[in-house]
Length: 140
Length: 109
Ligand SMILES: Nc1ncnc2c1ncn2[C@@H]1O[C@H](COP(=O)(O)OP(=O)(O)OP(=O)(O)O)[C@@H](O)[C@H]1O
Ligand SMILES: [Mg+2]
Image 1 (cartoon, chains in turn blue, orange):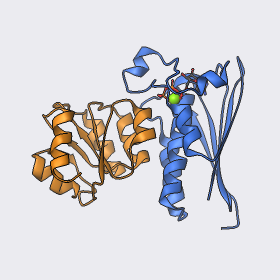
Image 2 (cartoon, chains in turn red, brown; image 1 turned 45 degrees about the vertical axis):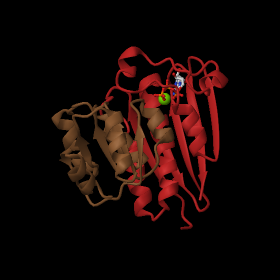
Image 3 (cartoon, chains in turn orange, brown; image 1 turned 30 degrees about the vertical axis):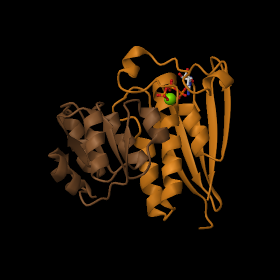
Image 4 (tube, helix red, strand yellow; image 1 turned 45 degrees about the horizontal axis):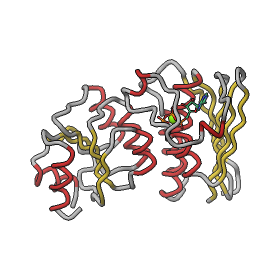
């Protein structure tokens, strides 16, 4: 595959019940492209965590997935409140999720650590009050 | 052991089994979704008491062999429908997670 494949998604911040749709769609597309299952699993878990974070913490955002010759890149952009202390947010167990969200099984403070674990590269850029940009890469 | 064999052996109620012949290779117990995403292995029987719609997405993305709802938990109709559509095996049991895990261990998992 020499051509880069691009997928774009608008992640709805209102609809919590359909959250994760973009990730499920990415999983399907990667499967159709014949990407190995272990890679698909890593990409879709990392993307799902990022997608859910945009829904819970940022009121939605945009996701873009690039499938290149040697890697899959996931870009997540939102205009939410931003992350003031990235180092703290990256720690296992740190969460500001509200109780209503916790009762659904979220809010363990494991999402960002999972994103780091399942990808080969991860970069977070965030400005309080402006939003958050996350780029992750999984090498093929 | 396949999902269908497990359901038979443990007397589980099968809500959906679109992939009933899928092989189970391990067990993971947990209700916090990001823990499950981080720790469950592909092919695991995921035992939980969480039954909301997000469970279907997590099961699909983490690629577990099935979701096994413990303690008599039964999900809403729309969750069952979504599981069926996504190809997720969804079963439920009266027993608590510990008992299910012991039985699965006896069956070789
Ligand atoms: N896109 C985002 N915008 C603003 N804040 C964020 C965003 N993503 C994460 N955060 C902050 O970082 C914290 C840690 O995120 P992480 O995904 O690790 O845990 P969580 O979402 O709270 O719980 P879990 O992912 O286990 O369900 C969040 O509680 C939130 O404060
Ligand atoms: Mg999270």
